[in-house]
Length: 81
Image (cartoon, rainbow, N blue to C red; front, top):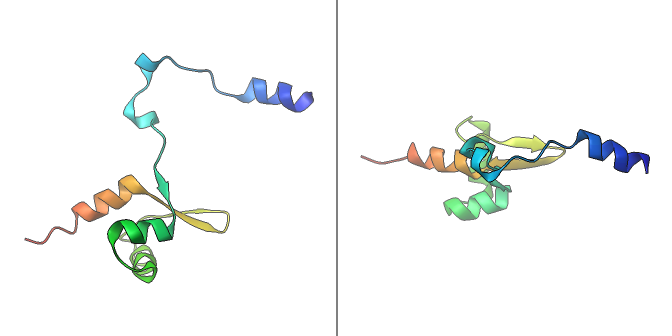
């Protein structure tokens, strides 16, 4: 009962659909395996790109996660001319 009351008071107020902007859109999060599949490279390459600072990642607990929008931005920097 106390936990339910606590959750009810700490949850953010709902906003109407008209006030939601793209900045409040949830992040598309992926694992190392999913990113390596998306980029068509091995998982070690994804890890090397992360260590080199070229591909930003989040550490959530013991897990590494990637924002797919950041992965797309990284791809845009890899254009061969």
